[in-house]
Image (cartoon, rainbow, N blue to C red; front, top):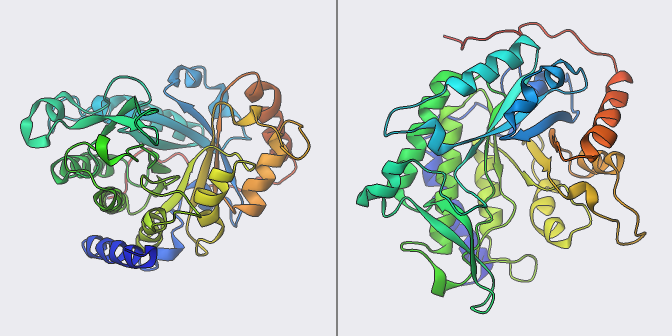
Length: 369
């Protein structure tokens, strides 16, 4: 089937999912909660968060949260730890981080992790043990042919309606506790391998995966109408743009745009053709008002400009994020020596060069009624 016809079918499927969402009145002008870092910016300016991932002890001494150059912190928590048993949620660790950040006038962006890069699943045991969830999670199979196929991490069964229903239930519970208090929720990257049909898990097809990702985004947007949703839609199985563009990545981006969710991804690497032809191409052409954020992850600051052979700089990445991709967020990783030597001094110098407006309501620690 031609790529445009495939894309049309997937967009229609996304529209059916969207019909159940309580969307904002202007879905293409999401600006998150009135107390968000974006609203605080009083205009179109990239907000700098620190991505600590699971290294939460970096927040314990309060130094990062006190730093005026930082708008907030992106941290990672797994489905497994937030729902240790079916319908039993444990948000105590997240609550503590939200309260502490708010005390310093900062915001938390939660990355809700259902995909891993190590040999263990991140979903609750009941999903793995109850046969109605068909295993709950599966090993990701990377590689483009049988000779290179290998397992690399795990992913929840994002194409499985039974698993998606449980994911939506978790989001609903999180939304009741944190909508408007969190800066937002990040849905982890859509790149999960499975390019080889001979290695597909049960029920998986490229098209089902697209509609599954759309359903995850819809559930997140419904649960968090006031906080931002950022879908890390970087690559999709079954296509490689531009030569083999089957419309999959375009479809999940278009669905996010339509329901007022944001888009983005891991890795700020301006010189990589793969990133430029996939995520960055869609970020550059997204409609005005669609929130976007990209993480500077381990290894990104070790990249070199192929034209000059010189290392990339924090300033060049920040300029690319602001001017080319029009990002609302950059999530700076804490890889050393780059973070202390390069990232923090740059962010502090940038912060010192601009006035800081007052921010009423920054210390609210309870949700709106």
